[in-house]
Amino acid sequence: MDRLLVIGGASVDVIRLEDRTVESVGGAGMYTAMAAHACGAQVALFGARPNPYPDCMEPVAGHLTTWFGAVISQDRVLRFDIS
Image (tube, rainbow, N blue to C red; front, side, top):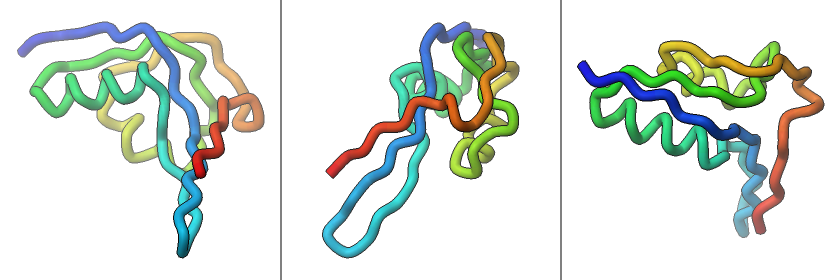
């Protein structure tokens, strides 16, 4: 199986739709890591790592082989508001 190290970040995106607001995992590093995982690679991510994970990150973080990087608190996670 192929192995890949992705260098990049993860964020929490707040997406405002006409009828509801949802939180979703975002960040180019996380998107790239999840795409590689979907293609069958074992993926590690190098970037700021929240501890504990925000709720929306739990499912995707479990698909990473490992997540390296500085540990940050949940309140330091990048957040983007998308309308």
